[in-house]
Amino acid sequence: MKIAIIGTGYVGLPTGVGLAEFGNDVVCIDKIEQKITDLNAGKITLYEDGLEELFIKNKNSGKLKFTTDMESGVEQADVVIIAVGTPTHPITKEADLKYIYAAAGELAQYLAGYTVIAVKSTVPVGTGDNVEDIIKTSNPNADFDVVSLPEFLREGFAVEDFFNPDRIVIGANSERAKAKIAELYTPFNGKTNFLYVARRSSEAIKYAANSFLAVKVHYINEMADFCERSGADIDEVAKGMGLDSRLGAKFLQPGPGYGGSCFPKDTTAMVSMAKGHGVDLNIVETAVKQNALRKIKMAERICNAVKEVEKPTIGVLGLTFKGGTDDVRESPAMEIIQEIIKSERVSVKAYDPKGLDNAKSILTDGIYYAKNAYDACKGTDLCVVLTEWVDFKEIDLAKLKEVMNTPSIMDLRNLLDRDTVRNAGFKYSRIGEADGN
Image (cartoon, rainbow, N blue to C red; front, side):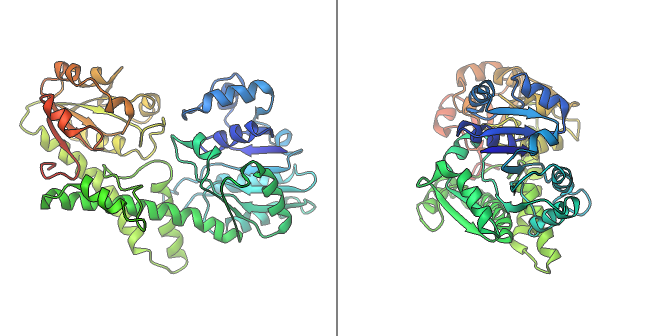
């Protein structure tokens, strides 16, 4: 099939690479000229484990192409996938759909023959109706259907999730559109669960799923706070909870709060969307508010740990919102650092295996960006683990101890083995343990 994908970000690019790998002719379209120039030159523009190899393979085979020209990308496409951003509107806190609607208005004029427009971006319920109206208005003669095709790609695992999805949700209001999308996803027949629903239901599923997971993350963080005060151990409590098949073990890892490009904006949009329909989502709204406060509390915890030091320096390991990605958007690590340096009392040195360049574009003052983990902790009074990179789990503790002023680690991801760290001579604190305060 001939596929056009509008948007080359963390959803569009992995999706395009994956569909090309299945033998489709894929054209990825983006307005950012430099990004397209880099992609055409064989330079990948984001980090995802396993993505670069497939990107180069399919680009070199001619199955994967890149352009800024909407017309050449769309005019021969059987399916056009919209995968542009839907950021939180700074005032209304709703999902900002200007990129979605702009893409719909532009692509409409180039449709030739029957085309399925698949909205893969996370959008509020009813957006597909609006996209349909925009296209009809722009091109009354167009032969098309609009479907909702929500993405469930975890950042850091996008390639794995594309080829091994646990479900494919298709929101289509016509049998013709269902058949076209079913053809697109033929390689997954017999390998995953297909769910065909109405378009509005499909749009709601992604928000409902992400909101539930965000609530689950916040819940285990609250339980971690309780464990610290009561003398229980959150790791043991979470393990006991996870053995219950009704609850499941995933998303029961305590930490400094959820972040990234999905949970923060999707929960905020979900609350706003519900209010627009006269519904109060009190559980989700509480999670949103308390998750923001948690990052402030984590910053206070870090500062309190070095309050007896006259001019303390801390080494931060991890800047991305989780391991396996270079994405620092809404990263708890970045927000915690920004909170710490407000007082100008604590100096911060930081390192991340993949996110340094993106971090530098957000935070330039008050932080030293290190060349490796040991450089980040050299001469420091406290090492703080803020992202669960495998690199940090395997750190050489003896070498780390040598470079630090004070052998002290605060592990806000519960990444390290507590006994190993303490036996190596470190003072060690973690989330959800009685001495974690």
